[in-house]
Amino acid sequence: MPLGDYKELLDLVECLKKDFEKFYLKGIKVSGTRIRAGLQDIKKKIQDIRIDIQKTKKNDCKMRYSAANTEAAIARGRALGARKKKNAATQKS
Image (tube, rainbow, N blue to C red):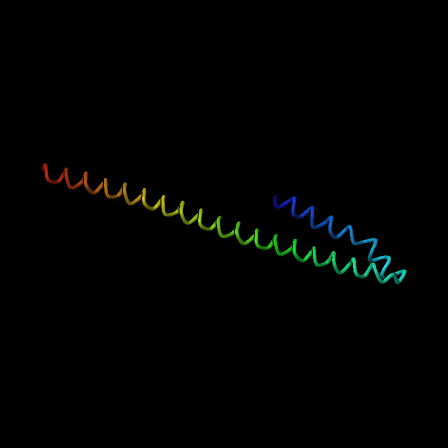
């Protein structure tokens, strides 16, 4: 999906090329209207991409935090098990 968004953004920009030439080189005012509408579409697409980036970063951070907690819990469990074995061995002696 991210590369698709990037390609779509490039297509939106590329579509405006002829209207830019018509407006700035030939002075055709209606091309200016199409440029402004196209720029608005680009703005919306960029905002969607920015939101997707934030969600991806947030989810990645949560996944890393969750994995770290899981690893820490496993380590605590191993340490607790080792202490129980040591205490059991000490009580037998």
